[in-house]
Image (tube, rainbow, N blue to C red; front, side, top):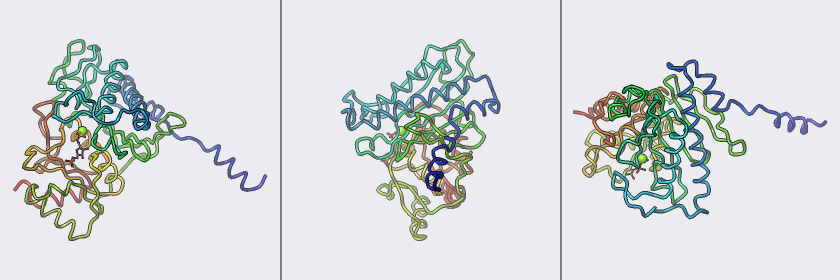
Amino acid sequence: MTMNVQTALANLALPVGTTLDRYIMQRQTAFPYATGELSQLLRDMALASKIINREINRAGLMDITGSAGSGNNVQGETQQKLDVVANIRFIRALKNGGEVCALISEEDEDIIHTGNDNAKYVVAIDPLDGSSNIDVNVSIGTIFSIYRRITPVGSKATLADFLQGGDQQVAAGYILYGSSTILVLTTGEGVSGFTYDNSLGEYILSHPNLRQPRAGQIFSCNDGNEADYPIPVQAYLRQCKQQRLTGRYIGSLVADFHRNLIKGGIYLYPQTARLPEGKLRLLYECYPMAFIAEQAGGRACNGEQRILAIAPTSLHQRSPLFIGSSDMINQLNGMSLNG
Ligand code: AHM
Ligand code: MG
């Protein structure tokens, strides 16, 4: 055998790596409540995301892009067909999985009861974030957050189960449907990333123990709104530009966050005149991303306090969000954002 053939054979025989399933199984004992239910719930989320990944990949062929024509979601935004599809898929997966008693979704005004009142978990989810990017083949994502219910098992879940506060999350994650599809997950012991292998239909551990660089070269915001931003944020952005940092903004939180997580950077969605509370939703956008950021060594705040320390008051409330590399967030805060 020539060296080339030997190398080719050796490459073919390389181990595939750790699948998400195996990872979850191995880590299960480290979960605070190791009964296997949270593991099963995470597997249900992964399964739904694989189905959505498939729908996204063939969206252009299936005439399922564009507006669903079924009106607006609770934020008064036009629902996209894929938003609706993703919402249905996740709700179905969580209902069938049996580990979730109720969920809230960006696409539904009220709590969705799964009928599994004996289940211990509740989920807050944005099934397809960045939906204005769907029609133009730009990266979009799913964001989710998981809590143990505080109401008694066997009863119907209530608002209180969802308004526990960000520090009570037991797990959070996102799926980025991008140049490749990646699932990024935390259960409160660091952050791991799993890249989807299409040919196997499996998520494979590709980014163990993700750490966000303390600082980076990237700032991400909708620069068109700058004149509306609070003065300290404007000053911070001026400084970024004076330092010749790189401006990068996809308009999909998951994609912008993920890039900054890997490369180092800051994402800003401040309050504006039009959106005095900010745009992003606390329960299923800010909290899960903040949990992941902190677990990776980054920071997340609303200009006054840690995102995770904000006491929630309603299911779909909004919050300003400043999230990313710790030194950059510290610098922004140092410019007396709340002063
Ligand atoms: P969506 O949940 O309706 O998709 O909105 C959230 C998205 C984020 O992904 C993104 O960062 C932001 O809205 C972009 O907003 P804007 O177009 O105002 O810059
Ligand atoms: Mg969203």
